[in-house]
Image (cartoon, rainbow, N blue to C red; front, top):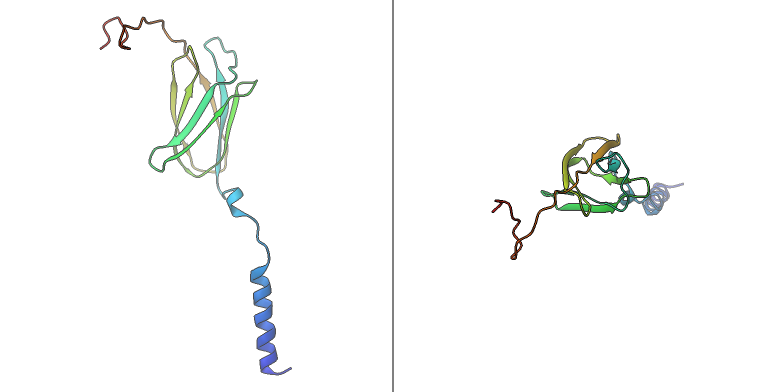
Length: 132
């Protein structure tokens, strides 16, 4: 084999190596974290169909989900960062909590909602009782 044949063979091997299919890296981030947990009412009962939102206001990242029949929620594949979690359910005060995702070790949260106090709403949308 001559020098020219060796060069052509090397170029063909490089082209073949570079053209082979590669795994889709966008499906899962290396080092990405998971935030998961359970939402309960004041008596300790699990709450289903509760909206849970996770967001990073700096990056604009935001996801939301609903709890399942066992009160569980899961956010997977989260880039390492600080996040703000908001939980909202009708008849309960909103719950907010900050969490830092720093590794692929899942973060487990036990969230308990508190019942809203009944407040009368004045015409115009303002609560009565000295709140302005």
